[in-house]
Image: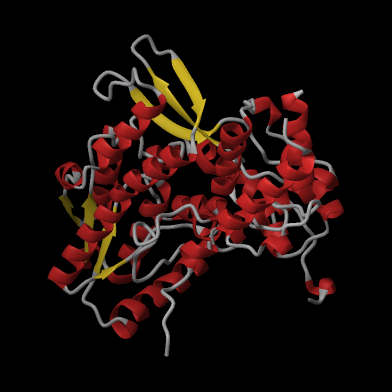
Length: 83
Length: 329
């Protein structure tokens, strides 16, 4: 199992590359949707990315702010699913 | 902003006190812009049988006379037959010339249906476009969430059973892009007739479509004048009553009329009934206090704040649609 820091790094890189926002602007606690970094399309891409890269399945009922609002939240969600 | 000059927020705040004055004013502007600014002889308008195109057409007819308008009906194989029937009823009532241009062959040429159906089959291998219907939309309302809505695809199979799945990003983009051929083909046809007749194209988006980005860039977003783009939907209905738009059109639920399965605009995009959305959008745009709005709308101040955030996100993420081409000088 990969470390949380590595998960966060992969997510941050994906968000930065997909949204064309500099990586340093995507901090662990940055609210990626509230701050307008990601839209609907970005959200779908993000779900697809974490399902492919971390071999988890995000159910519709799990598409919540607490699981997706920031790099921190996403990493916690992935860790929870992997456990 | 001087808050003291703001009208207190109420459910009647968008009510047009004198529809005849507004219609006269819009008529003067249309006449001036068609003949003066654009120097064209008349107007071409796409008629969908919906409330927005009907009001736009009735307004324009009142402004420049029905004899100077060409109404275009542009059905394709997924269009509801009711759309053309209602569009014809409006045109006959106003006494304007119409042409029916079936755009299905053009769409076949663009492989619109084939591209969309192939993407649909990637998700549902059992999908048969001849026997089944499909639509895309937002499954659950994310109105109070700071997350953007997630689009789902639904197919309706023989026994009426609906099967829904979340749309993967590649298929979502492909289905949207293929479907947008419809609006862009209609825009091409409108401009064909406009150029042929030396007319202008009068577009039909209302305020929500324009501000929230519910239009196709260079599709239904492509026109020379958009006379109702500043009007809220309930105001469009109020003007429709005044202009005596046929009752069946006023009573018809707004649909996308784009996918083979029936789908309302609320289900596809807006997530709120128009009556509520109008008031909330007005409050959002005019910076009303969420507490004041909450009392009128029977929702908590927290819910109102979340809806405002939702509006803000929709507006900012669709800025690209409203942008003119970037030019370097």
